[in-house]
Length: 254
Ligand code: SAH
Image (cartoon, rainbow, N blue to C red):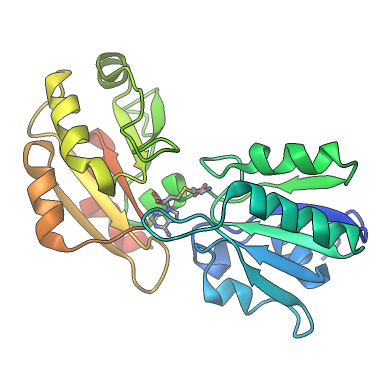
């Protein structure tokens, strides 16, 4: 393989997207970074299969924010990354999915740059795209949508996000929610109030792309009850829109 990668310098931080779970979805760039790192500071969402790819002498530290679980403060994570870089380590900050998609990538990178520590961002495959795909749901389809929206199910304080539901519902045929589980009842109510068809299909995919992947498809009007009954757990994404109808034909492709 003839690809030239930049040098992973001691005393720098590489912020790498690990994808949604399946190790096969790592980018070559991420794989290369894993081979070079002295220390990997990873999110709670990064799968064991991926961490196993690190060399035996590489130190692994878990440091990730996780809804509902006691997790380190953002400041603590940044401080630790700065500390390790100042010890002249090759510091790999490994994040689930893509660092810049609901991943606080910029929030972590900016204070590190302020300390004159070099940072390199390596994008990853985001759960909203690959997770949907693994359930057979394309996020766009020529016959269905020209617009797609990625929405977080809750803001940083855990509250329902300040979304203009009317505008969202009317302008975006396909909507992918990250972190939907906490407020599915409100998401359902708001989308119906904003005029979405009660019979429109919703797909929820949990632990997408891993061995524990589960998905259910139900109608918007009863998705809250159906998801409660299904015992699906986080991490999960929720897709609503006409492309969900394609899952019956495409789910077998993964
Ligand atoms: N930066 C990540 C998103 C982090 S926010 C990315 O680009 O994918 C965390 C949320 O991502 C989870 O609550 C869930 O909504 C989603 N997520 C991450 N991994 C997932 C997985 N394997 N299956 C389903 N959802 C996942």
